[in-house]
Length: 244
Ligand SMILES: [Zn+2]
Image (cartoon, rainbow, N blue to C red; front, top):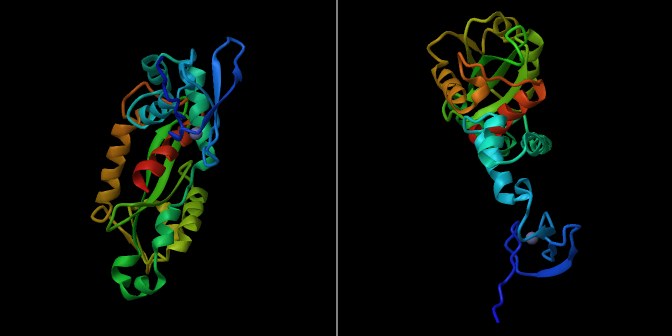
């Protein structure tokens, strides 16, 4: 007789008990690990969309130059599964780099004022549905480390920049390097504002990375998001995972 130890696919725990059967007659198991986020699972899913590994791949693919339909085709799952899985992530998205904010030591910032608060701020064009419906990604990065401080998606309007400026408040920035777009001169104090192409090279380079890695941001493509929600979501997921 052979025994095969059952492990939880979510937390790898071996504290597993049987928990009845599904309507198809497949054995269901219950993970008794109190720290496990999932609890109930099957060993062989008929529905590939339920596999933890497939769910993980959905996220990875959308952040690596695949559209939602590419992902659905390559993973042999339904388009709706892809959309649902991505939408679930919306709850954990952050517009501000709170991890970086927590590490900011006020004493250190005061001591190293020159380096501490320099930001490059810029906006990047993209669209939702058609080109008559532009959507700009406004974000600010640390001039020295390249980490994104905060981001906002919206129109190319002053009010969106004001939103971003509010988010940047807690970082105690002392210099903003931007281009010559009017919104910056209107809302930034001339003492802390240095416009010009010389100091925005890093953020322009970051835009290139975004355009290479997210299908909906690629230039001269026919790929785009159909809804603002998905557009902002995928950009947000990318910034949260790779740029914070
Ligand atoms: Zn578990």
